[in-house]
Picture 1 (tube, rainbow, N blue to C red):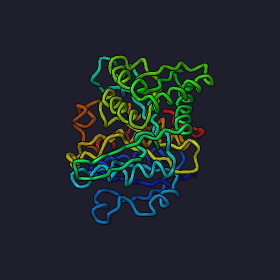
Picture 2 (tube, one colour; picture 1 turned 90 degrees about the vertical axis):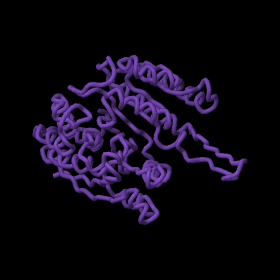
Picture 3 (cartoon, rainbow, N blue to C red; picture 1 turned 120 degrees about the horizontal axis):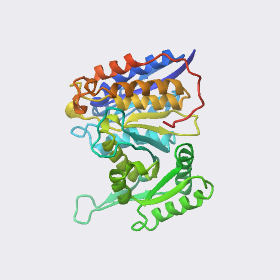
Picture 4 (cartoon, rainbow, N blue to C red; picture 1 turned 135 degrees about the horizontal axis):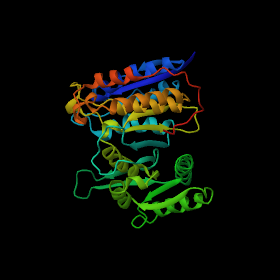
Length: 363
């Protein structure tokens, strides 16, 4: 029987709850499809930082390296630890150490879920550059605390980094509906964003079957709200992708439905899968968190591992439960708690012994 070694980082707040709720669903889908999961829990969190002064141990990346995949809940507790510390101490180092340069986030309405828009028929795949750009961490502050204080934050765009994430987007568009939207702000940022546009233009010659449209980030933000059905694959820089995918989460019914994959398509390292939502300390421990984003992230993880049948079974079960909104959490109009939603999804899983597909993260 196939087996996969999974690192679990529940993290903070509701991260612990959604991971705990999701794992029985993932274990059941694995068992029904001929493989098992070996899990190791890493209690790295803001509480750990307060005790040790580190978000993860000095050898944390090396501890994770032996695993096949990483499933993360949520990290952050801003009342206790600044977000700049928690983010740069855990999530970003993992992304950069394993060169997880693709952050993939699917946005579509599940059956039965009501979004805030009149439009309901959309299926957007956002591809966010994940290791450089505006989140490179290059910069500093001088004359701190004086009237002459200066803060500099430098965005880093390399040809290798921009070209490879755009190429990944082109490949996904070719598999989907053949449309790619490249996002910049080149009218205002005449160096980095014009560079991005030029790389997009050069690559488009290799993909004559893909229709390419270039958008400024403000224009595509509006389009995601007014005409989301016109978009297929959206490729953006680290910052722009981060912002646009929160819009994507909003139009698909909320952050509780927003899944993501942090992937190195070359393989050889563990990719990381996580819900887009934060740790929501204000509702932690109350059973109010929607576990679907984490379960959906687990389905993306299985698809990346080549277990397409299990991923498909999970999403079919999620759609069945979402189709009866009373089975969802109160923020979605239902009356179920976190565990009950996950239990309902597990109960809908059908044991289909599918064939094992090749590695893919296309959802």
